[in-house]
Length: 64
Image (cartoon, rainbow, N blue to C red; front, side, top):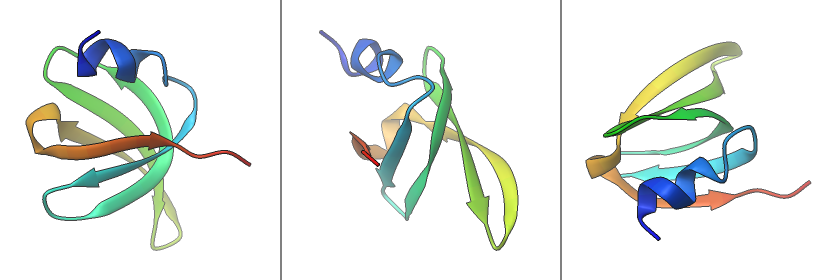
């Protein structure tokens, strides 16, 4: 199973995404062919972040 296929299983779940530059926590909204969209709260405001799959080091589900 590819990374993209595994990421699709986490859609709608709370996840932590570690990229080459930062760590983000939020809800995984969708997974495209070479990107994903994460809904995260940054500095008190809800943002939608588009992240390239090539820049993601780790994607993990958060429980709780």
